Every structure is written in C-alpha cells, then in structure tokens.
Length: 79
Image (cartoon, rainbow, N blue to C red):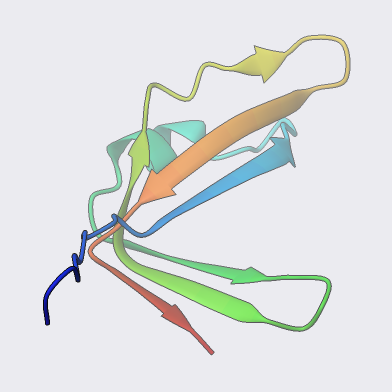
C-alpha cells in the first residue's frame, strides 16, 4: 500500500518497586530469559517473554526504598 510504513518496536515493561531485604537484584541483573507478567489495575495482563533487565538496576531511591526497573524482551503478549 502506498504511504504505509510499519516500524517494529521492542516489547518492554517499566515499573517501580520497593526494595526489601530479600529483594533479588542480582537475579534480575543476570537473568537473560525471564518471563515478566504484569497485571494492571484495569484487569489487563501483559506477558513479556525472553526478558532481560535494561540498565544496571542501581536506580534506588534512598528516601522511600523504591527502585525503577525496565525489562525488554523478545515477545510481548496482551491477554
């Protein structure tokens, strides 16, 4: 079709979590084929397959113990 362009986008998930004493940051930093499942407040579910963490995972807020994480993957599926 003339004038149609398709651009591939990487499937990803960004989230903010709370760091607890048993938070598995090393496991998340070294994982290369993880499955990340996100259930949103509206009931939608997104599953990211063959996922890995973007960045180093050291973005921790010392005031409230929160951490910002981003995961990319090969396949993202809405359920």
